[in-house]
View (cartoon, rainbow, N blue to C red):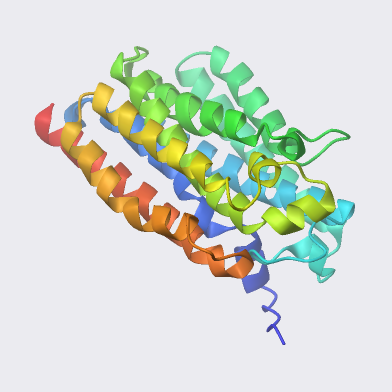
Length: 289
């Protein structure tokens, strides 16, 4: 019998801490594109808070929406609050909205220090977080999850953080946005590969569910290739080699015969790869620039 997490731990698990590198890495990479002495530390810190609040809010929003739909009745992945019935779905929704409000208030502060256009970007990010699995036609159920992850956890987070340093955008920021977005998509693919059978049964048509367990690993390959390509074109060849080496193990897991819970290590390895590659990029920027 699966052990039921305690009152505090269940909320921590539902926040899905293994997905948080997708929020942190692009912010760190974007900030590090300028020299350490030139970093606007307050603006960077505000970006970190906004990114984390959006990610956690999105995770709770997904928990709520999937829970009330019954999509998570049979879970093979992380613990879910609404589906477990241990917490009222309305409370999960309230917590999700609270995190989005935090992102909005901090984003307002950041926009007041930089550009009011950031409010529009932030508003669309909140909508993207909610409607991933929320609303009458959630885009995550129709195979558009990767597109929005690439946009918001790649280009918006990386380029946006770079912009708020001195209101300019280095040309390389777009390539590193591609790389960080692709790593975030790899994290999403690891999640979707694990849930292929359950998603198909629930009518959730992610790209992985459409392709099936045998062909879906090629989506993971594409994410790795885009990661390496973005880093190479951005001018960090050594970091690209490191990324390629690190992703060998996750690729082996993706193409293995594992299914369901046996694929949880793929998510763990993907998160580690993203953190290590991000840290290597930051270190490389500061040494060479």
